[in-house]
Image 1: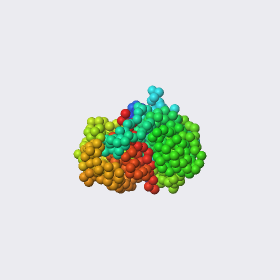
Image 2: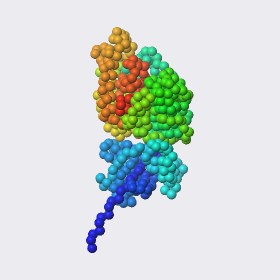
Image 3: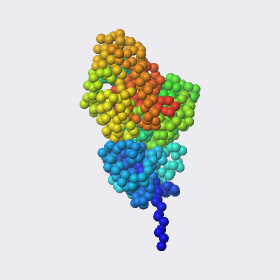
Image 4: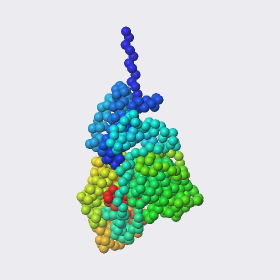
Length: 582
């Protein structure tokens, strides 16, 4: 009797997701095994996990999906699709796994099938609705004190309905804001001077800064990642979805970071970034609520100062174009094409995928009013000033030519708080630091929390302040008055003793920027640097004159962000954010 032909191995697609409402907080995962030909859901799995982090929940979802596929056929080949860049890159072997909670889960997932039988693909969140809904069902069940039951699940039907209802490229899903969008304490940060700050302090002595009533943000998860739509007082971080107004998110901790989706007015938010065609974000105004960047066609920004270029039909009070103005101010980031639509405000209202939103934002940011077609996702630099050193509260010049101080105990605590804030959002994909001790120490604390390595970039070092190193502004005024006056008057002037001029620093930062944009195209990178380099990144992105350096305040352990597009355009998304320290 002839041997039977071997049965061909089956193929499965596994889609998995996890979420944590608080990060760490009440968490759950969802996973579905699909037939790759018909798209039929063969097995669904979901579970409430108790209090764990978002990344752990995602790994648990992956593990559950792989196990479900193995139960169907242990000889199968599996293609995993997830919207977690971290999990996909780590399981593909391109990123190292350092976090102690994720190492054993990743190792366990790698053992379910033999090496080579599982492949991984990152997909946008809009393409992962089924697993997303399963994860949310599990968290909802856990909140009721119940276990998730497959017989009660409507995730597949809900995902299919959302696909039919949502416009192309958008989704009506939800997840992952929860308690992480909690209201932070109110308050403003006082600046004590208008001079450019030496690295020792937030600003040197001089004329006072006018900084009344700056809106605050809970944290800076910038670029791709956490989606936005918040309740009152919560930070609207990332991308707000079609028809999903972030109602009442004004005042303290209410800056909308990132990209606002089509028809998604971010009510009451500070206006930073690029407003898209025809999508006003209602009611955001006030001192320090400048609309920085380029206002798109049909995007009025009444009541806001408009720095940059206003597009056709986009009157922005102060610098307006042709067209009829409407009330309100655009929300932070890029508000998309279309009229404001009604929708369900609240936590977890979903949006366009981050890639689509960034592409759309690029079309507005890159040129006045109109932009070229698809330029892809930008390189997003999250700019972190190091934590305090012993020189910081004394407001002493501390550049690259001085004593190279390490962090003080306060500075180390600040770094830990930044690390916790960035870990909650999970969007940082790499960490790059200046070679000085205070930046390397800050970066090391953050990177350890994120499970990443630290790369050193010489170009991110602070300006060399020559003979002024270690002195206060007043001491420099007493000892070197003529040199100080020249330095304040011209970017080409060097500090006493042959330090580095602001012009030289600008040239160095521009070259560093270009190198890093090329190296990290389409990714979100944390750059840990100093006062002058970070201000220079922002100045160059805005096309502002050198004297603008004297008009910025940058606090220790603050976060700023700039996105860079393929055509050379840039968008400032955040500046001097410190709510994570309060």
